[in-house]
Length: 415
Ligand SMILES: *Cc1c(COP(=O)(O)O)cnc(C)c1O
Image 1 (cartoon, rainbow, N blue to C red):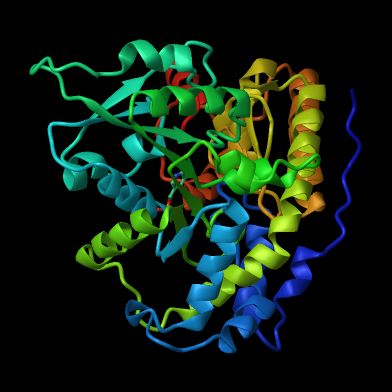
Image 2: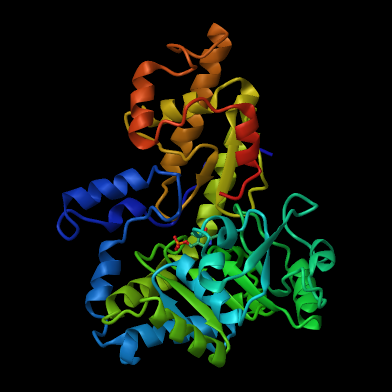
C-alpha cells in the first residue's frame, strides 16, 4: 500500500527563534530537523527553556526541590508505581535499578543479547553489581519469550552456576514493540521463581503513544522497576526516571548518592523534562507516521527494510537495489540541505520535518534512476562520489568498507 506524504500539526522549525535562542541555535535546529541518527539529537526549544527559568531552585539531594518532586510524582502516577527517582541518564537509572535488585554475589541477570543494559552500558552490570549476565538469543529473532527464558533460569543450588536474580527486558528494542502478552507471561515466570523483573523502557513512551493507547500503567504492570528516558523521544535535554515501589526507590536513591548522581538545584532540568512530557509526548504518534511514510517511500523504490517499523525507527538497506549504503549516506549528506543517517538505522524524532522525509525518499529515487540510466551510480571508485565522501566523513567516522557480513550483523539490530 502506498503511503502518501505526511503533514504534522506543528512546525518544529518555529520553536527556536533568533530573538530568544540566537542564530546558532536556530541553525542547529535546522540541522537536527534532517538528522536521523538518533532521537537524542533534538534541540531544546525556547519555550522549554523558558519554562525551566520558572522552576523551583531548591536542593534535591535534601529532597527540597518542588519541581523535581512534582516530576517524579507525575511519572510515578502515570506508570502506576509508588515512587520515582530522577537521574541524569538512562544508563544511570538502569544500573542503579540493577544494583538495587541485586543483593550479593554470586548472582546473575538474564537479558537479550542485544540489550542496552548488557551491551551499551560499558559493562556496568559487572562493574557495579558484580553480576554475571546470561545473554539469550530470542528464538523468533525479535524478542525473548517465556519459553526462551524458562530453561535458562538458574534456580538450583549447583555451586558451579550463579543463580538468576533478575530478568531485564527492553521495550522498544530497535523500535520494535515487545508484545505485552509475552511480557505478562515472563512476569508470571519471574514471580513464580521469586526473580525480579526490570524494564529498560528508554523508549516505552513510543509504545504508549499510538492509538489505541496502551497506558504506561498497563505496560509496566508486570515489572518491579522500570527506567524511562526523558532525553530520547521526549526531547528533554537531560534525564531519565526510575520507577518502582517506595522501598525500592529509597534504596536506589542511596546508591544514586554513592555513585555521585545526586543533583542539587535540579529544578530547571526537571521542569524542562516536565515540559517535554506535556508538549512532546503527544508528538510521538506523528513521528511514527513519518517513519511509516519513510518506510513506504523507500519500499516502493525496492529498498529492503530490515525490521518491522512499529514505532520511530526504519532500518533501510539500499543494497537491495544495487546502491551501496555508503553511497546513499554520502549523497544524502551532500544535499544542499544535508540529511544525516547513522548507517541503516534511521530514527524519526519529534523535530524531523515531513520535508526531510520527502527529500530522503527523493534522493534515493534519484540515485535509483541514475543507476538505471547508467547501469551504475556515478562514482570515483568505492561506489562513492569523491565530493560526497568528504561530506560523509565530516559527519561520520570513516569506517572502511562495509562488508555484507557486517551489514547483516548490524541489521540484526540492537544498536
Ligand atoms: C539510550 C538508551 C538508554 C540510556 O541511555 P543514556 O544515554 O545513558 O541516557 C538505555 N536503554 C536504551 C535501550 C537506550 O536506547
